[in-house]
Amino acid sequence: MDQRNAGGQSRAPISAQDGWDKYTADHIALLDHLGIDRCHLYGQCIGGSFILNLIKAQPERAQSAVLAQPIGRVGAMPPGRSSRFDVWAESLKDHPEATPPVLDVFYRNLYEPGFVYCVDRVFVSTVLTPCLVLAGNDEAHPYAISEELAKLLPNCEFLPEWKAGAVLGAARARVKEFLSKHTPRA
Image (cartoon, rainbow, N blue to C red; front, side, top):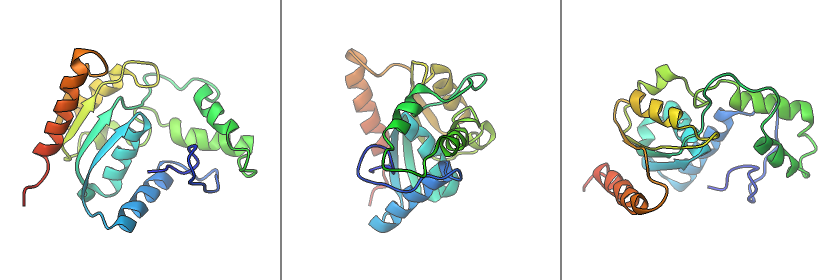
């Protein structure tokens, strides 16, 4: 989907009340608009958090989920905003409402909670949706977050290596197999 204010064509006002639930409402509205009652979900990076928050809001819609290199934080929140967020904020020239104070609160709404940002560990341990976690391996996508998600999710498969070389082809096949396994047969 063309995520609001993410560089595509979808634009919406930015406010200090924005956060994960606003994005989830967009996702649900799109599913409703398209008449999709139940589907597989695939999310990379921030998409993992989008998936978890959608499952929290409407678990019956998720047939299965693939979380590729999910974002998260290990440890305390560093001071200030991340450079990635600031680069994105610089692209908001057509958003006069996106003042520095509004962006500061919006940033905290998104990233202050920690772990995977949108849900806590207790919730993750209750998710019944079949999940496949493809591990991250850098600062924004810590391996420790992927590994913990895989341990907490009750119905989860885990791929620790998948990004390049010989394992990439095997990972593609595994994702297809996972989705096929969780697709109801008529």
